Length: 274
Ligand code: KMH
Ligand code: ZN
Image (cartoon, rainbow, N blue to C red; front, side, top):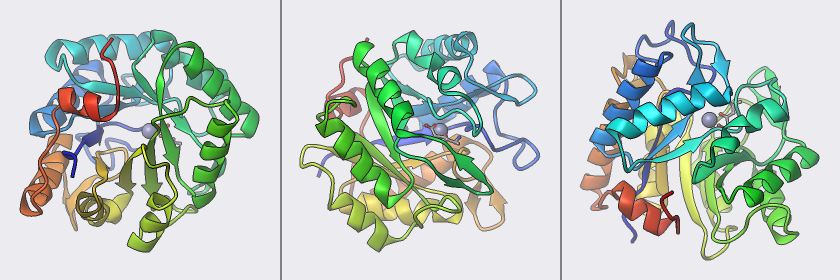
């Protein structure tokens, strides 16, 4: 089996300091959380950014400041800025981080319920996001929240609207209103990806570590972090993203899977550092 790539989704757009005081908003806090995750074993940081008061933003300048600051302390880390942003943002707003030419960025694969909201990713939006990523030579991380999102991504790749092989797909399971985080659902999805694709699973909330264990056993990769889960165990808030990553590292060690460094992850994902 390949080494395990751990992604830390350190911030997200929805979670707040009221829910967990360690959720980062300021540049300094975002750097602190990225470093804690990388020091614990994360090869990738999936990045959202906030204004100092916690308001989610897709502002290019804010992303640049955060990316530059993270790079100073974690020079090798793979950064995957979000193009999902927060529910309700326009496509143009969401696309701003792609102007910074990151080596990867997320690409969300369909409209879905998102708790009480609707997360809009229409076909024209997806084609526009794909066009931008092809033009800017950005490798997408395809975010699939629903069974049908995988088929959408595969079809759009086949038609040349989205960047193709080898695909990196992140199955985000357990969002209220979307595909649940169960092992049979995960297996159904993994059985339908192209042979040369890589995959990651993100289990939302209490599903974080059961999904991590499944991915470790199945040869996939794992995402954890405050974006998806604020607790280390039932009733125990995580003090940092690093604590969540450490728990995945412990699971992997118990199950005999080695952890990939960022340099090794770049090789596994067929990426070239910029
Ligand atoms: N904030 C969610 C509505 C992504 O980063 O691409 C969407 C999201 C997906 O977080
Ligand atoms: Zn995200």
